[in-house]
Image: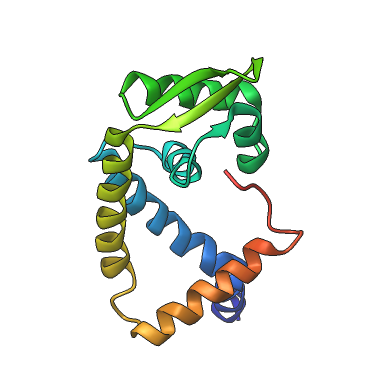
Length: 149
């Protein structure tokens, strides 16, 4: 009887997702670390890919504490992946821009992550991968999902 209960518990979607998520998270973190990036730095660079963004807008987009963002920005700026300047229209604001080196790092990370996806989801055909992505986005968009960053 205990094995049936254990099987039922471990078959819960949250448990399955947490278990697979831990494996996926470790692989993704390792893949990014090979390029000197973290998940936070990847999300930050991703938001800058379409053009300059104010530091306050990044805080809002990423849903993080300002001090956490400043630490990431300091690191990325030190690596030459982004630049911060005062907004000429409002000297109290900082505008953050991805550098050419940052855009290259983001493109390289995309290739690395595609390879990690291929390894992680080798058992799924392309249509199943699309379906999984859609379902996970639906869950992430729900009000009960949690943190963005």
